[in-house]
Length: 236
Image (cartoon, rainbow, N blue to C red; front, side):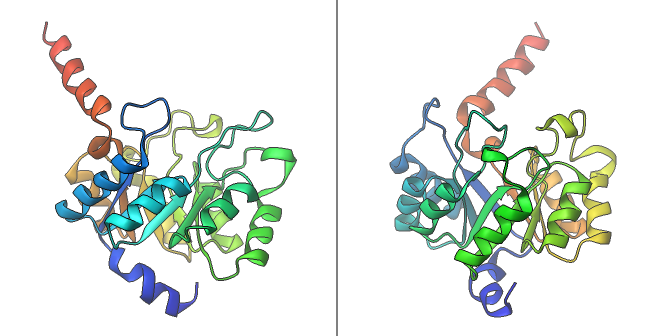
């Protein structure tokens, strides 16, 4: 990672909160307009960065806030379980709006068209050498592999969401996964995934995470509502 890029675009998220503002097309808040206002609300609450899905949402968010953005495109392919920025098609779409960081699935799962992660990484670096990249991973091994490959940021985004990480939880044993990776990785780690309380967010920063991403518990009303409903049902 070039130091000039780091200072210009990313220093402001160091030890700070990034809010994930996303709503898929089957969700009530799906709309670039709404995600732009969601990002503005996050800014007013003190967020120092935004994670967003699709060039349309990112473009609208850029009109509403002047914050670093982690950009992704979620898209399903029949020949792969990978859905976070899976191919160069999604990378090219994101580069139309130039988010500060592009995040992509860096797990060991088979990519669309059977492309290896290393080959995909090399292709991105060759076409967009200045673009900062974040590796969304699900296991310690994947995180260290992405670190060795040269990703600018390592993310815990997919812990518990892949077949190889079933049963794993990022918060188990005082965030043991984060503590282990921080001891071995050279690149900054961004904590993300099921960090659903202010206390958890504070703890991962205390442990040494570069930043923390919080999403559903802030920006998905249906999930927040369900947690209250479930609690009430337990009492009845």
